[in-house]
Structure formats: C-alpha cells, structure tokens
Length: 183
Length: 61
Image 1 (tube, each protein chain N blue to C red):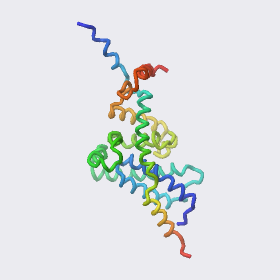
Image 2 (image 1 turned 90 degrees about the vertical axis):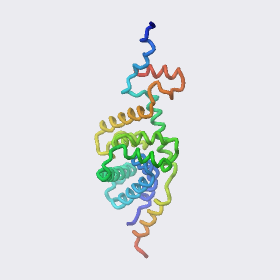
Image 3 (image 1 turned 90 degrees about the horizontal axis):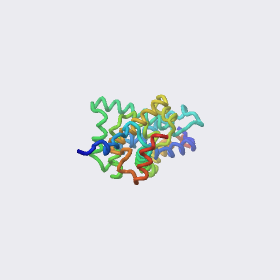
C-alpha cells in the first residue's frame, strides 16, 4: 500500500501515547506493544475509512480499544478469571512494568473494572475530552463521566488518599479542604 | 467521664465526594505513570514495521 507521508507521520506520532494507553489497559509492556502493532496494521489496512480532517489520534485509540476489548473477552473466556487477573500479573512480574514508584498505582488501576479504567485513562491521562472519550468507547458522555468518577473514588479508597489525607501539605490547606464543599 | 463527642468530628467527611486535592493527587500520579511511557518515544520496532509495509506496498521500478 502506498503510504502518504502525512499518514506515516500521524501514525508514528501517535505511537507513544498509544503505547501508554495500551500499557495502562493491559498492564504488560509486551502485550501492549503487540496491541499497538496490531492497531497500526488495522489502521493502515483501513485507512480509506479514516475521514481526513478528523482526529487521527482518536481514530487510532478507538481501533486499539476495540481490539483490546475483543481480545480481553476472548481471554476472559479462556482463563475464567475476573478483574483481578491483571493485578495478579503485576504482582508476579513487577520488573516488567517500569518504575517501581508507579507500581502501587498500577496495581490499584489494574483492579478497576475495565470500563472505568479506560475512561479514567482517556480523560485523565490521554487528554481527551469527555465527548471524545465517549466516542472512542462507543457510549454516552454521561456514562463516561460517571465511570471516571467511580474510578477516582475507588482509586482513592485503594490508595488510602482521603480528603484530610496524609498528603495534605499543611494545616492551612486542610482547613481550606475541610470547608471546600461549600462553594 | 469526659465528653467523647468532640474528637470524632473529623469522621463526618463524606467519602462519596472527592475533594479537589484528592483528584489533583490522583491525576498527577496517573499522568506521571502515563508520561513515563510517552517519554520513551517510538521504539524501533514500529518504525521498522512501517518501513517494511512501505517496501512491500511499493511497486518495484
């Protein structure tokens, strides 16, 4: 297939964030890179269905997300194992997943239901708007919002971050936080 | 016996609604983890993949 230079650039340019998204989804670098490769192959094979002028990055994220979901369902049938599966993978192979400092966070993230995890990553890390994230996940904007909220609440619980938490920098900030619900 | 009510005031926090500080903290960690991967750039295997696709797609002159 003849590859347009602008397509090549856009696809390669999206690779770093596609990898970050894929690793956050599946918790495994090798599998994530396979997901990204498969995404590139599918995208280029179907490049005619991409509408020029629309967001190439969002289009690629959609392909990756759908591919991951269909794989995930397949695996889930095979392994008969719920959400805890990725968390277990992380615990047994911590070195594979990059810096130790993110390990606790990754483990907590891995325990979220898949739909909450992807919503949180798309909005909180990939920088997509709620509307874009809804398109990528094929659901309503309100659904994305509530998934992101639930994801944040569960993460905060798992990581023991609370409103008056140990992370609070000083008493003054705590005082502000304690009164924060009013406005 | 002393009055026990006062020290427990802090437990009145509603756990359902996250404060801004908590959200900021979570967002920070999430982005740090994510950007750690983004900063690795494009691994060679993906550049090579595109090169191979281009070569196999081009008609030989």
